[in-house]
Image (cartoon, rainbow over all chains, first blue to last red; front, side, top):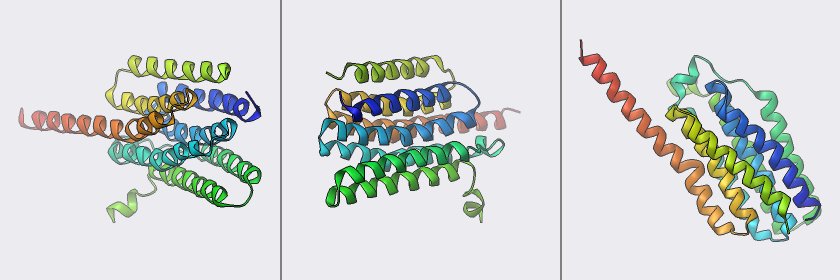
Length: 150
Length: 87
């Protein structure tokens, strides 16, 4: 147990725990936001775990999650569009807070890794994570509905 | 060696799985199932099985919710047709 895994324990326990609470209770708009944030919170946790275990290969898990998490949210945004249109979720504060947390984790890990291929991979994961999260949040709040109809 | 981490992730999986059973609406169950997929992938990673975690992520976070949501959509549409034809 080192500092990285300790940080991962606290971040996963608090962050993913909160999203489990959010996705299990409340109105539908809160649940979709919590589902979106669960992947955005688990991905930095996986990066921290890879660093804590000293196994760079575990970063692939974070890469797959950064790719597929927003895809899952887009599935919900597309198929629940009618239910969400009457009561669209607006949770930009939480979304940007989680995106900032992901950016901080990626930047700290980049500083530890030093320049090289591993750092490029980390930056790609960070860009995918934050970009995908913001796109999925915008799709959930109905930002693309107008362009789809038009 | 990493006992607190394993305990935390196991508690997450237990809480999410209980929520997936307790929620009654299929649409909301699909949302909880998606989070359960992520939590299970975390558990496999913590248990040093990242290959299992990879496949769990691929299946659990996108494919299972997609299947559930498509089925719900089809059933609802058929029910809507039935109501439309009944009167």
